[in-house]
Image 1 (spheres, helix red, strand yellow):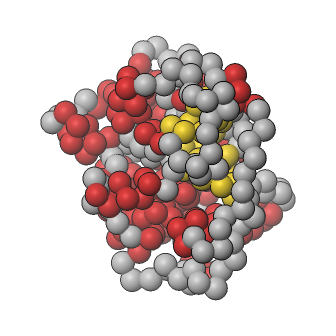
Image 2: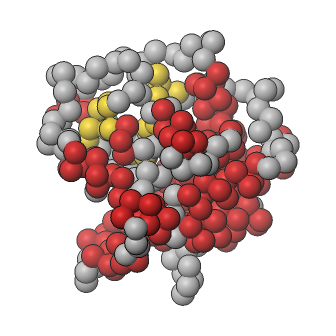
Length: 285
């Protein structure tokens, strides 16, 4: 990616190295971490994973965050990617007569309080609609390389763009509608199917951002889209379940297969149109 001349977002909070208020996260342990792994790292649903911790009533307590260090290239990269999403979605919303309210992005290490419960690095990057913040422990990027064999700066940017996609869904009211549909689902498989469509739409929105941002600033380089496709394939439900247990259980999928995730990212990237990301009106995803 070519981001050297791009601006950095001011909507970044650096909580790395800070301890949890009260000294510990309330009750999130091995069981929750295992569920988070099954929930597939990308776009983890905080209502499923984070709220399984015990309470953590300190979530709304103010957390003093530092500005990112000037000599921290990883943090500066994240801030530039976030700024790019702000510019892209700001224009998209403006074109429809709306004003875009960007999310904050929180850098943390290990664990941190959120409006959705105790945020854990083991759950991977996630978006919390309660405080409209994206949370990421940057050690996840190393895991992308080592465990998922999905290296590259654009693969890292895709992670952020996917979570910002969840913010877009929150602003548009899609997340609330899906949550209600899941609550009224006849069984777990039907509930999971709604979750899959939500996640695939976030992948599509990430593709829309990539196409629009490149059109405005020529940020993409040769191989960047392949990096995103590799990451999407690596974190498909089928791929991760086979890696973890040797077989896949389709009814338990919550994020989509590798092929579906690649397809919907490409759908957004090839069209650059938000309306082409309606994963809820198509019969087959």
